[in-house]
Image 1 (tube, helix red, strand yellow):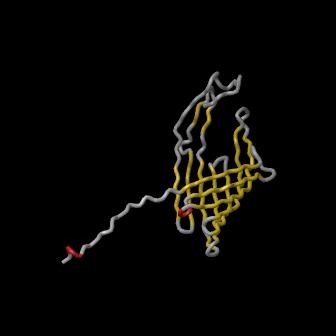
Image 2: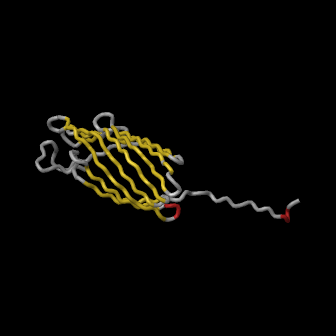
Image 3: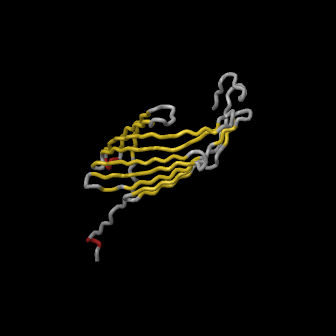
Length: 196
């Protein structure tokens, strides 16, 4: 739902509402020491008519990620990782980082993000490019049986000379892994009474 500013010449009076189908796809593979992921959002690049001659179209975006776990010793392991995001037109970003885990329970890490994006100015049609560069840190703890519950805090700071709406951001995350459903098989008991 779009609620326009008063006296907006590009929109009719009242509220504009529009809906459309938005498709996405993803695949994830996890092995003992590494993981790979590939996903695409906005596959059909749906467009929305916001009244008059204004049309907004979603841009298909591809995400490719991967990481590898290195066992340093019995209690410490490190997992470097990378993420590439692109729409093959105006937006290309990459993330490089790493996570250190202690006793499979405590973890912390750092991440660097950089890239270039652009957008079209609605009235003039000019293309404006801006850089995206920031560094982030994360720390957290796992608990409950099999470390099913995970709590983490992360902090991001935009690097100097990069464009952003806010210079910093904070995030608290909570995740829980549901136990796998296993089918219980009753053991077969042989009775010597009926043995031959």
